[in-house]
Length: 145
Image (cartoon, rainbow, N blue to C red; front, side, top):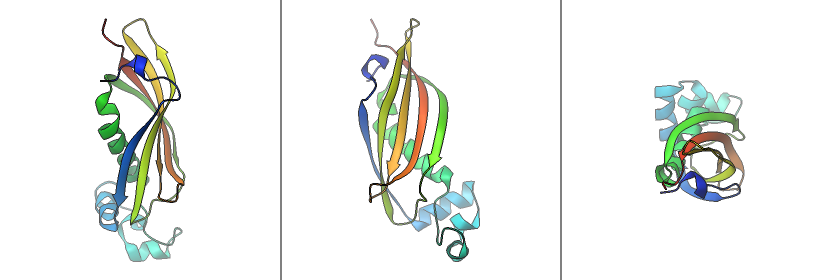
C-alpha cells in the first residue's frame, strides 16, 4: 500500500495499455454519448474527423480504468477531491493502443493524518503523441504510526 508520504512530486507510475476497437467505441457511445461521430462509421467518415473516434468520456474512462488498476487501487485513498484541466489532445481512433502514465505533481501532508496529492494522468498513442491529459487531486491517508 502506498501512503501520502510515498507519493512525492516527480514520481512516475506506468499504468499499462489498452487497445481500442471500433466495436468498443460504438458500444460505449450508444450507452453514454450517442453522437454519430462515435456510433456510425459512415456518418463519422463524412464528419469533421474523417472517421470514427472515441467519445471524450470513453477516452477518460480508459485513463481512469488504467489508473485504478495500476495506481489508485494500491494507494490508501481517502477520497477523490477534484478533476481539473481535462485536455483531449488528439482524437482516439479505432485499432489504436494507448499507454498510460501518472506523474505526481504535488504532495501536501496535513496534520489530520491525511495528505493532498495532485497527480497527472496521461494517455499516449503508439506514435507517442498525447491523447488525453488530466489532473486529479486525491486525499490520501498518511502512513499509520
